[in-house]
Length: 546
Image (cartoon, rainbow, N blue to C red):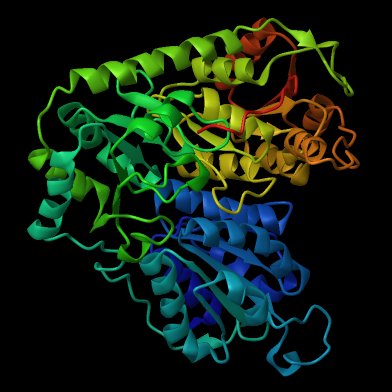
C-alpha cells in the first residue's frame, strides 16, 4: 500500500508528467520525499511561485503535455495565481497541487489558511479539496481529465496531514480518447469549399495550433492563391521567405497584412483565436477551422465553421480547393509585401542613436528596437524557441520578426510581465536540444529577476536579451497621448550585467549592432546561461495598423 503522496506521484508519472515546478513548503514535505524516491518526475525548484506556474503554462503551450506546479498554503497559492491566469487565458493543460493546513484547522483562523477553492475557482475548470486519502483515486483523475481532456487549469488542495497517510487508490493511465478532436464529416468540409471556390481575393490566417499542418497550409495557399497572415505565436508556421507570407496582425503588425485584409473577399482562419476586431473589416466573410467546436464563432463572427485538427482539416480543404493562379491578386500581394519589406529594411538599418536615459552600465548610444529584433532573427538557429515577455519589445517583435521554423512562446491573452524568463527555462527543460532565447524588456525582467539564479542553478544555456530603453515605453507613450502624467513610467534600472553575474549568469553589454552580433554569437554557442543588456531607443510603437 502506498501513501497519498506516493500515489499522487505515481499517477502523475502515468499521465506523462515530466516536471513539477515549485517552491518547497512544509505543507507538502512527504510529496517531495515521494518525488525524490523515483526518477520519472523531476522537481524544478524556483525562487517565486509565479515563476513555477508560468513555467508550467509555458511547457504546456510548447508541448501540449500536462504540466504541473506546486505551492504551499496561503501566500504560496496566492503567488501561483498569475501563471494559472496565463494558462487559463490561453487554455492549456496545467495542474496546480497545493498544500493546505491540517484538516482540523480548515475553516479556522489558522496561519496561512485561505479557502483555496474560492481563490482559484475563477481561473480553473476544476478545483477540489482532498478530504480523505482514499478519495485521491477519484479526485486526482478527475482533475487530470479536466486539465488534459478540456485543456483547462485544474487544482487539487491536499491537507498537510493527509500526504503520509495510507492510500488504497489504484494508479490509472489516461484514456486514449482524452483530448480527441472532432472529425468533420464530408458535408461540413464541402460547405467550406463552396465558399472558397467563390473567393477571388482569399487570405489565410494561421494560429499556433496550425503548426502541425505547416506543409499542408503552404500547399493550400499556393494552390488557392491565398496570402497568409499569422498571429504572433504562429510566427514561423509559414516562413517569411515564402512569397505568399504577409506578416502578422495586432499592434505594430504588418502593413502588408493590414492592407490585404481591406481588399480581401474571404478569410480562412486556421487554429487561431487571436482576433483584433478594429483591424479586421467588419464586412469580411470568415471561415474558421478549430479543434474545439465551442471556439468556432466564440471570439469572432464567422460565416462558416469546420471543427477539427488543422492537420486533419487543411489537407482535405487542399484536395478540394480550386487550383487558380490568380495572377492579379498574387501580384497585388507581392507588391504589398515588397513595400513592407523595404520599410522594415530601412527601419532596421538605423545607426546607433543617443540613449534617452542611460542607466547603470549603459553607454551614451543605443539601437533601434527594430534593429535588435532583426539581429536576433539573423543569429537564431532556424528551429529555435523564442520566449517573449510583455512590453514594448513585443510590438516590435511582431512587426519585424519573420521566422523560419521558430516557435514563439507568449503570454497571449493574460499578457503578464515576467513571462519571458520562466518560459525560456521551461522550454529548455522540455526541448534541451533546441536553442532558446528570452526576449524581455527592462521592466519585465525585474518582475521575476530572482529566476536568473534558477537559470544558473539548473545550468540551462538560454540566451536572455534585455531590451533596455530605461522606461515603460508603452505605458509612457499611452499616458502622454491620453493626457496623463508620466509618473511611475521610468523606474530606475539596476546594472543588469552586474546582477546577472552576481546570480551566476554570464553577462554582456551591447550598444551597437556589432556588439550585439558578437554577444549573440557567443551566447548561442555557450554551455551556460547568458544575459545580454541591449541598449535600445524608445520610438513610439505603431498601433494604428495590423
